[in-house]
Image 1 (cartoon, rainbow, N blue to C red):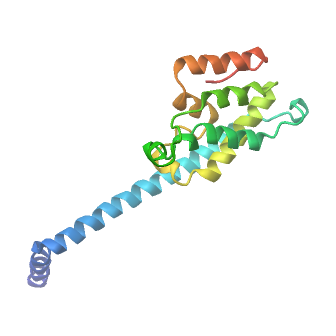
Image 2 (image 1 turned 60 degrees about the vertical axis):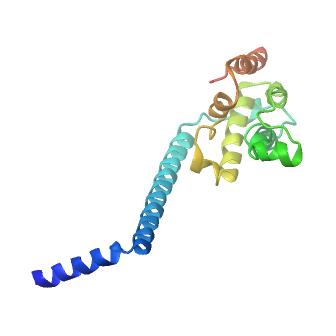
Image 3 (image 1 turned 120 degrees about the horizontal axis):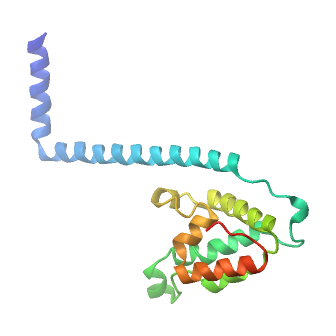
Length: 176
């Protein structure tokens, strides 16, 4: 039995000693590690999402500002922040489009909110929109999966202070 195992080991070592076979094994190992990392991130994100949704404060529908479409506001925020610079330098070179965050659009969107429940509804709409759009972004980062996380990630201190001031002027207590 041990002679048979030793023979299999020798044949495996001989097979791996060929550079092309070693490269194949290395590539397969890298793919396996990437797959495990991807699966781990997806599982952690799913657990965090379930926890966040279970702990989220409930929006009082009667306190919402009439006429506000929170899904549309979330889409506009996505366009002004995450999507605005997703093409990176290629957008400047190929399409002459700006990159970075469109802070003025962020200020305008936050300025439409009138109640704390408006803010809560926008946070929930952001999370829902992010979950629909984030096939590629959750692989990279989960920092922008919540509205406060996105604002903290995309804006500088001075810009965050202006966002807080806009919300506080309308009696809204921000959590960023």
